[in-house]
Image 1 (spheres, rainbow, N blue to C red):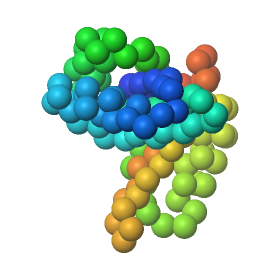
Image 2: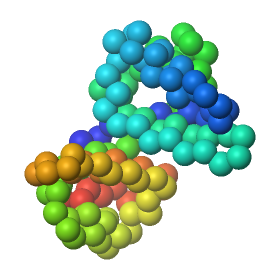
Image 3: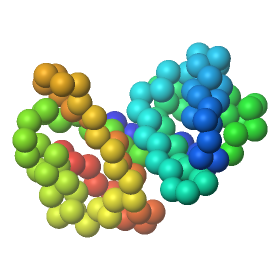
Image 4: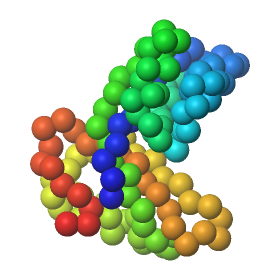
Length: 129
């Protein structure tokens, strides 16, 4: 488990909107570790974790891309059936109310990664405690 920052960016649902964010960060030599994008109607949301949050913030600010910065946690788990449920059960038992979550694993890989944000004011908890 590692504490990090998640950047949430509201975008127009149009071609190139996510590419602009990726190019802005890439040009600033910011590595994107995780990205989730969703759209509904004319708008969309991009949630991302950058390897260097401070550098990402500077790049987004310089490009005048508005964002919300939220504390988040990443957690490595086994890439097997039921592993995600076990972690989520532990968080729920501690009273952690998730605001967002996304997970990924490479096919055939041994590890998966989840990224989550929790309700402000929720009990401080980690999935491993």
